[in-house]
Length: 427
Image (cartoon, rainbow, N blue to C red):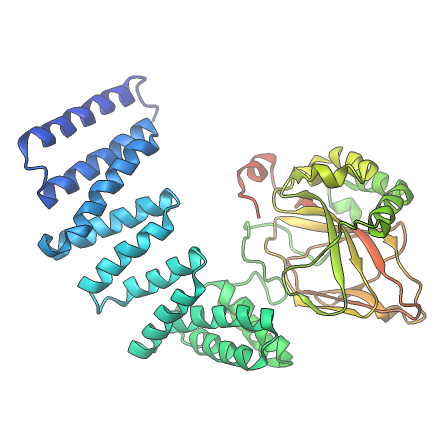
Protein backbone atom coordinates (compact mmCIF):
# COMPACT_ATOMS: atom_id res chain seq x y z
CA UNK A 1 0.00 0.00 0.00
CA UNK A 2 1.34 3.43 -0.97
CA UNK A 3 1.47 5.82 1.96
CA UNK A 4 -0.15 9.29 1.63
CA UNK A 5 2.48 11.99 0.91
CA UNK A 6 1.87 13.74 4.24
CA UNK A 7 1.83 10.56 6.32
CA UNK A 8 5.33 11.04 7.75
CA UNK A 9 4.65 14.69 8.56
CA UNK A 10 1.45 13.73 10.39
CA UNK A 11 3.27 10.99 12.30
CA UNK A 12 6.11 13.40 13.12
CA UNK A 13 3.60 15.92 14.49
CA UNK A 14 1.82 13.25 16.52
CA UNK A 15 5.04 11.98 18.07
CA UNK A 16 6.14 15.50 18.97
CA UNK A 17 2.76 16.16 20.62
CA UNK A 18 3.02 12.90 22.54
CA UNK A 19 6.53 13.75 23.69
CA UNK A 20 5.39 17.19 24.85
CA UNK A 21 2.46 15.70 26.76
CA UNK A 22 4.73 13.23 28.54
CA UNK A 23 7.11 15.96 29.63
CA UNK A 24 4.28 18.14 30.94
CA UNK A 25 2.06 15.59 32.64
CA UNK A 26 4.40 13.12 34.32
CA UNK A 27 7.30 13.17 36.74
CA UNK A 28 10.32 13.02 34.41
CA UNK A 29 12.31 11.07 36.99
CA UNK A 30 9.92 8.13 37.18
CA UNK A 31 11.33 5.03 35.41
CA UNK A 32 8.05 4.45 33.58
CA UNK A 33 8.05 8.03 32.30
CA UNK A 34 11.60 7.62 31.04
CA UNK A 35 10.59 4.37 29.32
CA UNK A 36 7.71 6.09 27.50
CA UNK A 37 9.98 8.97 26.52
CA UNK A 38 12.54 6.51 25.19
CA UNK A 39 9.86 4.74 23.14
CA UNK A 40 8.56 8.01 21.68
CA UNK A 41 12.06 9.16 20.80
CA UNK A 42 12.85 5.78 19.23
CA UNK A 43 9.80 6.12 16.94
CA UNK A 44 10.62 9.75 16.19
CA UNK A 45 14.21 8.82 15.30
CA UNK A 46 12.86 6.23 12.86
CA UNK A 47 10.59 8.79 11.18
CA UNK A 48 13.28 11.48 10.95
CA UNK A 49 16.14 9.02 10.31
CA UNK A 50 18.04 10.85 13.04
CA UNK A 51 20.88 9.32 15.02
CA UNK A 52 20.85 12.31 17.38
CA UNK A 53 17.26 11.55 18.43
CA UNK A 54 18.06 7.85 18.61
CA UNK A 55 20.90 8.59 21.01
CA UNK A 56 18.48 10.51 23.24
CA UNK A 57 16.28 7.40 23.28
CA UNK A 58 19.27 5.27 24.27
CA UNK A 59 20.04 7.78 27.03
CA UNK A 60 16.62 7.28 28.67
CA UNK A 61 16.75 3.49 28.36
CA UNK A 62 20.21 3.56 29.92
CA UNK A 63 19.08 5.81 32.77
CA UNK A 64 16.45 3.21 33.64
CA UNK A 65 19.13 0.52 33.75
CA UNK A 66 21.36 2.65 35.98
CA UNK A 67 18.40 3.03 38.39
CA UNK A 68 17.92 -0.73 38.54
CA UNK A 69 17.24 -0.85 42.30
CA UNK A 70 14.04 1.15 41.90
CA UNK A 71 12.86 -0.56 38.69
CA UNK A 72 10.57 -3.60 38.46
CA UNK A 73 11.89 -6.83 36.95
CA UNK A 74 9.62 -6.56 33.92
CA UNK A 75 10.53 -2.95 33.15
CA UNK A 76 14.24 -3.65 33.61
CA UNK A 77 14.08 -6.52 31.10
CA UNK A 78 12.19 -4.42 28.56
CA UNK A 79 14.46 -1.40 28.94
CA UNK A 80 17.58 -3.57 28.80
CA UNK A 81 16.44 -5.35 25.65
CA UNK A 82 15.61 -2.06 23.92
CA UNK A 83 18.80 -0.35 25.07
CA UNK A 84 21.07 -3.14 23.85
CA UNK A 85 19.36 -3.43 20.47
CA UNK A 86 19.68 0.30 19.83
CA UNK A 87 23.29 0.35 21.02
CA UNK A 88 24.11 -2.49 18.64
CA UNK A 89 22.36 -0.65 15.83
CA UNK A 90 24.57 2.40 16.50
CA UNK A 91 27.66 0.18 16.69
CA UNK A 92 28.06 0.84 20.41
CA UNK A 93 28.69 -2.78 21.35
CA UNK A 94 31.25 -1.88 24.00
CA UNK A 95 28.65 0.28 25.81
CA UNK A 96 26.20 -2.62 25.90
CA UNK A 97 28.57 -4.62 28.13
CA UNK A 98 27.46 -2.63 31.18
CA UNK A 99 23.78 -3.22 30.35
CA UNK A 100 24.32 -6.98 30.09
CA UNK A 101 26.13 -6.90 33.44
CA UNK A 102 23.20 -5.13 35.11
CA UNK A 103 20.78 -7.72 33.73
CA UNK A 104 23.03 -10.58 34.86
CA UNK A 105 23.27 -9.10 38.35
CA UNK A 106 19.47 -8.95 38.64
CA UNK A 107 18.77 -12.26 36.88
CA UNK A 108 21.76 -14.54 37.63
CA UNK A 109 19.88 -17.69 36.57
CA UNK A 110 19.12 -16.34 33.10
CA UNK A 111 22.05 -17.94 31.28
CA UNK A 112 21.09 -16.33 27.99
CA UNK A 113 22.28 -12.99 29.36
CA UNK A 114 25.68 -14.52 30.12
CA UNK A 115 25.85 -16.07 26.65
CA UNK A 116 25.15 -12.75 24.98
CA UNK A 117 27.68 -10.96 27.18
CA UNK A 118 30.29 -13.46 26.00
CA UNK A 119 29.31 -12.89 22.36
CA UNK A 120 29.49 -9.13 22.89
CA UNK A 121 33.02 -9.42 24.24
CA UNK A 122 33.93 -11.44 21.13
CA UNK A 123 32.36 -8.78 18.91
CA UNK A 124 34.50 -6.02 20.42
CA UNK A 125 37.66 -8.15 20.30
CA UNK A 126 37.96 -8.79 24.04
CA UNK A 127 38.64 -12.52 23.80
CA UNK A 128 40.04 -12.83 27.34
CA UNK A 129 36.82 -11.53 28.93
CA UNK A 130 34.76 -13.70 26.58
CA UNK A 131 36.74 -16.76 27.69
CA UNK A 132 36.00 -16.03 31.36
CA UNK A 133 32.28 -15.69 30.68
CA UNK A 134 32.11 -18.94 28.69
CA UNK A 135 34.20 -20.77 31.29
CA UNK A 136 31.76 -19.59 33.99
CA UNK A 137 28.82 -20.85 31.94
CA UNK A 138 30.43 -24.25 31.48
CA UNK A 139 31.08 -24.42 35.22
CA UNK A 140 27.47 -23.48 36.01
CA UNK A 141 25.61 -25.83 33.66
CA UNK A 142 27.92 -27.47 31.09
CA UNK A 143 26.49 -25.05 28.54
CA UNK A 144 26.98 -26.32 24.95
CA UNK A 145 26.72 -22.81 23.51
CA UNK A 146 29.59 -21.75 25.78
CA UNK A 147 31.64 -24.85 24.90
CA UNK A 148 31.33 -24.10 21.20
CA UNK A 149 32.39 -20.47 21.61
CA UNK A 150 35.22 -21.21 24.05
CA UNK A 151 36.44 -23.94 21.70
CA UNK A 152 36.37 -21.48 18.81
CA UNK A 153 38.47 -18.95 20.76
CA UNK A 154 40.99 -21.58 21.83
CA UNK A 155 41.23 -22.91 18.28
CA UNK A 156 42.12 -19.45 16.95
CA UNK A 157 44.80 -19.11 19.63
CA UNK A 158 46.14 -22.61 18.96
CA UNK A 159 46.50 -22.04 15.22
CA UNK A 160 48.27 -18.68 15.65
CA UNK A 161 50.64 -20.13 18.27
CA UNK A 162 50.97 -23.61 16.75
CA UNK A 163 49.88 -25.05 20.11
CA UNK A 164 48.78 -28.67 19.70
CA UNK A 165 47.59 -29.09 23.31
CA UNK A 166 45.34 -26.05 23.05
CA UNK A 167 44.06 -27.27 19.69
CA UNK A 168 43.12 -30.63 21.22
CA UNK A 169 41.25 -28.87 24.03
CA UNK A 170 39.39 -26.66 21.56
CA UNK A 171 38.39 -29.62 19.41
CA UNK A 172 37.08 -31.50 22.45
CA UNK A 173 34.90 -28.56 23.49
CA UNK A 174 33.46 -27.93 20.02
CA UNK A 175 32.85 -31.63 19.47
CA UNK A 176 30.89 -31.94 22.73
CA UNK A 177 28.80 -28.92 21.74
CA UNK A 178 28.04 -30.09 18.22
CA UNK A 179 27.10 -33.60 19.31
CA UNK A 180 24.50 -32.07 21.65
CA UNK A 181 21.46 -32.48 19.39
CA UNK A 182 19.43 -29.96 21.40
CA UNK A 183 21.89 -27.18 20.59
CA UNK A 184 21.34 -25.49 17.22
CA UNK A 185 24.82 -24.18 16.43
CA UNK A 186 26.00 -22.12 13.46
CA UNK A 187 28.00 -23.62 10.62
CA UNK A 188 31.05 -21.69 11.81
CA UNK A 189 31.61 -24.22 14.59
CA UNK A 190 31.25 -27.28 12.32
CA UNK A 191 33.70 -25.63 9.94
CA UNK A 192 36.33 -24.94 12.60
CA UNK A 193 35.89 -28.27 14.36
CA UNK A 194 36.50 -30.09 11.08
CA UNK A 195 39.51 -27.89 10.36
CA UNK A 196 40.89 -28.51 13.86
CA UNK A 197 40.54 -32.28 13.44
CA UNK A 198 42.35 -32.11 10.12
CA UNK A 199 45.20 -30.12 11.67
CA UNK A 200 45.44 -32.86 14.32
CA UNK A 201 45.79 -35.37 11.47
CA UNK A 202 42.34 -36.87 12.09
CA UNK A 203 40.80 -36.54 8.60
CA UNK A 204 38.25 -39.32 9.04
CA UNK A 205 36.79 -37.70 12.15
CA UNK A 206 36.78 -34.37 10.32
CA UNK A 207 34.84 -35.90 7.43
CA UNK A 208 32.22 -37.21 9.87
CA UNK A 209 31.70 -33.69 11.21
CA UNK A 210 31.44 -32.26 7.68
CA UNK A 211 28.92 -34.97 6.77
CA UNK A 212 26.95 -34.25 9.94
CA UNK A 213 26.89 -30.58 8.93
CA UNK A 214 25.55 -31.53 5.50
CA UNK A 215 22.97 -33.92 7.02
CA UNK A 216 21.74 -31.16 9.34
CA UNK A 217 21.64 -28.76 6.35
CA UNK A 218 24.29 -26.55 7.95
CA UNK A 219 26.37 -26.91 4.77
CA UNK A 220 25.13 -26.97 1.19
CA UNK A 221 26.76 -30.39 0.81
CA UNK A 222 29.62 -32.48 2.18
CA UNK A 223 32.09 -30.73 -0.15
CA UNK A 224 30.56 -27.23 -0.30
CA UNK A 225 30.94 -25.59 3.11
CA UNK A 226 30.61 -21.84 2.59
CA UNK A 227 28.69 -19.97 5.29
CA UNK A 228 27.33 -16.91 3.43
CA UNK A 229 25.13 -18.33 0.71
CA UNK A 230 22.33 -17.51 -1.69
CA UNK A 231 19.83 -20.31 -2.31
CA UNK A 232 19.28 -21.96 -5.67
CA UNK A 233 22.65 -21.23 -7.28
CA UNK A 234 24.18 -23.93 -9.45
CA UNK A 235 26.85 -25.87 -7.56
CA UNK A 236 29.79 -27.56 -9.24
CA UNK A 237 33.43 -27.58 -8.19
CA UNK A 238 34.93 -26.86 -11.64
CA UNK A 239 33.37 -24.55 -14.24
CA UNK A 240 33.96 -24.53 -18.02
CA UNK A 241 34.76 -21.01 -19.21
CA UNK A 242 31.67 -20.98 -21.43
CA UNK A 243 29.40 -21.36 -18.36
CA UNK A 244 30.83 -18.33 -16.52
CA UNK A 245 28.96 -15.81 -18.68
CA UNK A 246 32.21 -13.93 -19.40
CA UNK A 247 34.12 -16.38 -21.60
CA UNK A 248 34.97 -13.70 -24.18
CA UNK A 249 36.46 -11.41 -21.51
CA UNK A 250 38.45 -14.25 -19.96
CA UNK A 251 39.81 -15.19 -23.38
CA UNK A 252 41.04 -11.60 -23.76
CA UNK A 253 42.82 -11.94 -20.40
CA UNK A 254 44.47 -15.10 -21.75
CA UNK A 255 45.57 -13.29 -24.92
CA UNK A 256 47.42 -10.72 -22.79
CA UNK A 257 48.89 -13.18 -20.31
CA UNK A 258 52.54 -12.35 -21.12
CA UNK A 259 52.04 -8.67 -20.32
CA UNK A 260 50.29 -9.64 -17.10
CA UNK A 261 53.13 -12.05 -16.28
CA UNK A 262 55.75 -9.35 -16.85
CA UNK A 263 53.96 -7.00 -14.43
CA UNK A 264 53.68 -9.72 -11.79
CA UNK A 265 57.36 -10.63 -12.12
CA UNK A 266 58.42 -7.00 -11.93
CA UNK A 267 56.50 -6.56 -8.67
CA UNK A 268 57.83 -9.84 -7.31
CA UNK A 269 61.45 -9.04 -8.22
CA UNK A 270 61.40 -5.41 -7.05
CA UNK A 271 63.53 -4.47 -4.06
CA UNK A 272 60.60 -2.98 -2.13
CA UNK A 273 58.48 -6.03 -2.90
CA UNK A 274 54.80 -5.58 -2.23
CA UNK A 275 53.76 -9.18 -1.78
CA UNK A 276 52.41 -9.90 1.71
CA UNK A 277 52.24 -13.24 3.47
CA UNK A 278 48.78 -14.78 3.73
CA UNK A 279 47.25 -13.91 7.08
CA UNK A 280 44.59 -16.60 7.62
CA UNK A 281 46.97 -19.34 8.87
CA UNK A 282 45.91 -21.56 5.97
CA UNK A 283 49.47 -22.51 5.09
CA UNK A 284 51.03 -25.64 6.57
CA UNK A 285 54.55 -25.32 5.14
CA UNK A 286 56.46 -23.00 2.80
CA UNK A 287 55.61 -19.48 1.64
CA UNK A 288 52.36 -18.17 0.12
CA UNK A 289 52.14 -14.46 -0.65
CA UNK A 290 49.80 -12.13 -2.49
CA UNK A 291 49.77 -8.71 -4.15
CA UNK A 292 46.27 -7.24 -4.05
CA UNK A 293 44.84 -5.29 -7.00
CA UNK A 294 41.12 -5.19 -6.18
CA UNK A 295 39.47 -6.00 -2.83
CA UNK A 296 35.68 -6.18 -2.37
CA UNK A 297 35.11 -4.35 -5.63
CA UNK A 298 37.55 -1.53 -4.83
CA UNK A 299 40.73 -0.81 -6.71
CA UNK A 300 44.02 -0.73 -4.79
CA UNK A 301 45.22 2.35 -6.65
CA UNK A 302 48.85 2.23 -5.47
CA UNK A 303 49.19 -1.42 -6.45
CA UNK A 304 47.38 -1.00 -9.77
CA UNK A 305 49.91 1.71 -10.64
CA UNK A 306 52.48 -1.11 -10.65
CA UNK A 307 50.29 -3.35 -12.84
CA UNK A 308 48.48 -0.97 -15.22
CA UNK A 309 47.87 -3.49 -18.01
CA UNK A 310 46.40 -6.06 -15.66
CA UNK A 311 44.13 -3.55 -13.91
CA UNK A 312 43.03 -2.00 -17.21
CA UNK A 313 41.89 -5.41 -18.44
CA UNK A 314 40.06 -6.13 -15.19
CA UNK A 315 38.30 -2.74 -15.26
CA UNK A 316 36.61 -3.81 -18.50
CA UNK A 317 35.01 -6.80 -16.76
CA UNK A 318 32.38 -5.51 -14.29
CA UNK A 319 31.62 -9.06 -13.13
CA UNK A 320 35.13 -9.09 -11.66
CA UNK A 321 35.89 -5.42 -11.00
CA UNK A 322 32.65 -4.85 -9.06
CA UNK A 323 32.66 -8.12 -7.15
CA UNK A 324 32.23 -7.03 -3.52
CA UNK A 325 32.59 -10.64 -2.42
CA UNK A 326 35.93 -11.22 -4.06
CA UNK A 327 39.46 -10.11 -4.89
CA UNK A 328 41.91 -9.77 -7.77
CA UNK A 329 45.52 -10.47 -6.86
CA UNK A 330 48.85 -11.91 -7.93
CA UNK A 331 49.59 -15.04 -5.90
CA UNK A 332 53.05 -16.49 -5.40
CA UNK A 333 53.83 -19.85 -3.84
CA UNK A 334 57.40 -20.95 -3.21
CA UNK A 335 58.49 -24.53 -3.61
CA UNK A 336 57.77 -26.70 -0.57
CA UNK A 337 54.39 -25.10 0.18
CA UNK A 338 51.26 -26.92 1.29
CA UNK A 339 47.96 -25.15 1.98
CA UNK A 340 45.53 -26.86 4.35
CA UNK A 341 42.17 -27.93 2.95
CA UNK A 342 39.72 -25.05 3.34
CA UNK A 343 36.57 -23.51 1.86
CA UNK A 344 35.80 -19.96 0.75
CA UNK A 345 33.13 -17.91 2.56
CA UNK A 346 30.37 -17.70 -0.07
CA UNK A 347 28.72 -19.52 -2.99
CA UNK A 348 28.14 -16.15 -4.72
CA UNK A 349 31.46 -16.12 -6.55
CA UNK A 350 33.66 -18.25 -8.78
CA UNK A 351 37.45 -18.07 -8.81
CA UNK A 352 39.59 -17.91 -11.94
CA UNK A 353 43.31 -18.74 -11.98
CA UNK A 354 45.58 -17.60 -14.83
CA UNK A 355 48.97 -19.33 -14.90
CA UNK A 356 51.80 -16.78 -15.19
CA UNK A 357 54.93 -18.64 -14.11
CA UNK A 358 54.44 -22.34 -13.60
CA UNK A 359 57.61 -24.43 -13.20
CA UNK A 360 57.87 -27.63 -15.17
CA UNK A 361 57.66 -30.77 -13.06
CA UNK A 362 58.50 -34.35 -13.95
CA UNK A 363 55.86 -35.36 -11.41
CA UNK A 364 52.71 -33.39 -12.22
CA UNK A 365 51.29 -34.08 -8.75
CA UNK A 366 53.97 -31.87 -7.18
CA UNK A 367 52.08 -28.74 -8.19
CA UNK A 368 48.36 -29.28 -7.97
CA UNK A 369 45.07 -27.82 -6.75
CA UNK A 370 42.45 -30.24 -5.40
CA UNK A 371 38.86 -28.98 -5.53
CA UNK A 372 36.49 -31.51 -3.93
CA UNK A 373 37.63 -34.71 -5.68
CA UNK A 374 38.96 -32.95 -8.80
CA UNK A 375 42.66 -32.27 -9.41
CA UNK A 376 43.65 -29.18 -11.44
CA UNK A 377 47.05 -28.16 -12.79
CA UNK A 378 48.33 -24.73 -13.82
CA UNK A 379 49.95 -23.95 -17.17
CA UNK A 380 51.46 -20.70 -18.41
CA UNK A 381 48.82 -18.62 -20.16
CA UNK A 382 45.93 -20.94 -19.34
CA UNK A 383 42.83 -20.16 -17.23
CA UNK A 384 40.67 -22.49 -15.22
CA UNK A 385 37.66 -21.58 -13.07
CA UNK A 386 36.50 -23.29 -9.90
CA UNK A 387 34.11 -22.63 -7.05
CA UNK A 388 36.23 -21.95 -3.97
CA UNK A 389 33.27 -22.51 -1.64
CA UNK A 390 34.08 -26.20 -2.22
CA UNK A 391 36.76 -27.81 -0.08
CA UNK A 392 40.13 -27.27 -1.77
CA UNK A 393 43.82 -27.84 -1.05
CA UNK A 394 47.12 -26.85 -2.70
CA UNK A 395 50.58 -28.40 -3.03
CA UNK A 396 53.60 -26.89 -4.77
CA UNK A 397 57.11 -28.26 -4.97
CA UNK A 398 59.49 -28.77 -7.86
CA UNK A 399 62.95 -30.06 -8.63
CA UNK A 400 64.46 -26.62 -9.33
CA UNK A 401 63.03 -24.91 -6.25
CA UNK A 402 61.07 -22.40 -8.38
CA UNK A 403 58.07 -20.33 -7.35
CA UNK A 404 54.61 -20.64 -8.90
CA UNK A 405 52.88 -17.34 -9.78
CA UNK A 406 49.26 -16.97 -10.87
CA UNK A 407 46.67 -14.20 -11.26
CA UNK A 408 43.57 -14.84 -9.15
CA UNK A 409 40.28 -13.20 -10.17
CA UNK A 410 36.94 -13.60 -8.40
CA UNK A 411 33.80 -13.20 -10.50
CA UNK A 412 30.14 -13.10 -9.56
CA UNK A 413 28.25 -16.36 -9.89
CA UNK A 414 26.57 -16.10 -13.32
CA UNK A 415 23.10 -16.85 -11.93
CA UNK A 416 23.09 -13.82 -9.63
CA UNK A 417 21.08 -10.93 -11.04
CA UNK A 418 22.56 -7.43 -11.15
CA UNK A 419 20.01 -6.37 -8.54
CA UNK A 420 21.00 -9.18 -6.18
CA UNK A 421 24.71 -8.44 -6.66
CA UNK A 422 24.10 -4.84 -5.70
CA UNK A 423 22.20 -5.80 -2.54
CA UNK A 424 24.69 -8.27 -1.10
CA UNK A 425 27.00 -7.02 1.67
CA UNK A 426 30.72 -7.20 1.03
CA UNK A 427 32.81 -10.14 2.23
